[in-house]
Amino acid sequence: MLELVDVRSGYDSEEVLHGLSFSVPPGSVVAVVGSNGAGKTTTLKVISGLLGCHHGHVSVDGRRLSGSSTGEAVRAGVAHVPEGRQVFSNMTVRENLVLGAYAARRVSITSRLDAVIDVFPELVPRLGNYAGSLSGGQQQMLVIGRGLMSEPNYLLLDEPSLGLAPLVTKRIFEVVARLRREGKGVLLVEQNGRQALALAQQAFLLERGTITLTGSGEELLADPGVVERYLGVGTSKGSLDRQQDWTAALAGALVDDQAPEPANRRAIRK
Ligand code: ATP
Image (tube, rainbow, N blue to C red; front, side, top):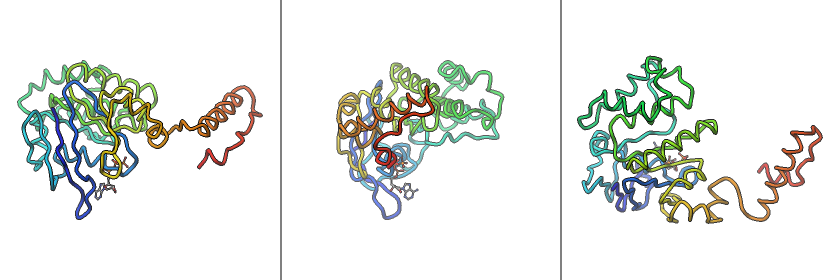
């Protein structure tokens, strides 16, 4: 179990996380939703040791981390896949993957490479290519694969589908589901909140560094407040009307250049 107990943390004098407590059991996906600046990335940084906590602690499978280094978290079985697909562009795909095993507990690089390739066979024909030459989707597979090279029990995924085409996004979510089935605990921060919640056994809403709502993914998906404010599409009567209005306009545009203008266009654009 990955556990945060009353964690307070932040940058310089500004506290961003105000006493977070939650856990990620093995074999489960825990999703975090919340608006920009709520502290989602900061939470992941604290777990992986990129940022210390000034109160509370993080523990992994009963072992308390000192929070002093990222190597400590990796050796405890935590892999952090940061936002933004940070590959080493001038290194090959294979070299990028091998780097992922560097700080890990003793792992056999060959068997880990085989395991990662089993998850992402798409990378096989690219192993000798420079990582910078990959598409965005392939780079995302590479950074997740790099995280898996340390043979983690827990994976922290920060916005893994950001900017990806729907088909690639679907593929990434399939992999998340597979990793969960294989027994890994996945902490998932996602702008695609709907898909993340649909996959999540547990979820919570983070607002200004505080957890304000917890439940199963399904429960949060069924919460009109969460949907309205954090999942991008409203469920209020007015919002539904606006969506239908746009849907009609778009459908019309496909068959007729003279598609009707939505009546409340200005409101929609806000
Ligand atoms: P986003 O989706 O926009 O990244 P988030 O929920 O992940 O949002 P964080 O990136 O954790 O939010 O940021 C939480 C708060 O911490 C914000 O107010 C942000 O400005 C601040 N912050 C983040 N990184 C730093 C930093 N390196 N130095 C100072 N403040 C920071």
